[in-house]
Image (cartoon, rainbow, N blue to C red; front, side, top):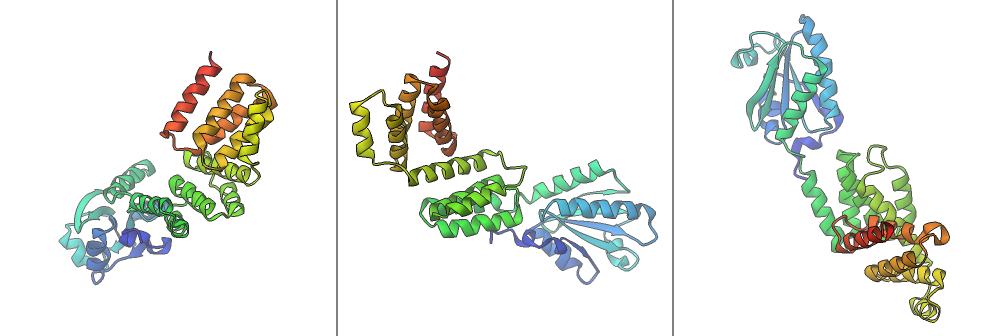
Amino acid sequence: MFGMGEATAPAADLITDGTEATFMKDVIEASKTTPIIVDFWATWCGPCKQLTPALEAAVTAAKGKVRLVKIDVDQNPRIAAQLRIQSIPTVYAFWQGQPVDGFQGAQPGSEIKAFIDRVAALGGDGGLADAIAAAEEMLAEGAAADAAETFAAILGEEPENAPAYGGLARAYLAIGDLDQVEALLNAAPAKIAKSVEVEAARAQLELARQAASAGPEDDLRRAVEAEPANHQARFDLALALHASGKIEEAVDELLDLFRRDRAWNDGAAKTQLMIIFDALKPTDPVALKGRRRLSSMIFA
């Protein structure tokens, strides 16, 4: 779906036994879309029994960014001869049909990981960045269901991809399924649970729930005008303004409330401002200006 070719292979297909008959397909052709690591080994080779399991574990951990083909040199002598394999274990990495890296002999785990990372980098991110950009464009154009499907597919490839996880939550928000958003955010992998993208979706969920119970904007505006010291009315007006898409006006009212009484309702104005800022992109002008104004008040 993302132009990743063989990188979308399930885990069971990441590690295969190659032969002379399949070498062209499994290594040369396959390496045009995904880096292929070839492990040349033999049943009688002691160091191979240490290296091969370590290679398999590292390839599995790379989650499809590389694949491993194991070649028994005793069963496939012509390939070994063509590639001038003089001792085993020997490991080659193929990319775009050509050997591009390799090593001989058993290696420590740190060296194997570094090798895998280096080889995986040849293939880029497998098109995930392009897929995320496409899903964001769908979401911006109102095709929330299509965006959700794309974000979910990306997470199928990389479950701890924070931009895709936050994007899926925002797509469900756009669809209006708030309960599903909450369940998704509660199930976020620990590694990305506090990421900017997931926290932004969490803030947007809270704002969406607030919007569902926001009061009439005009009535609240009149109440504030009639009684400027009515902090609850001003706070509720800010919620109503945000619910109607008037984000900058909502920020202004909350900043005014903070200026009047920063301790009101356990610092509710500041808390609400931070929710709004977190829901916006870090570079959003409203967030940047609002944070600056809030900071100047705090440290005045």
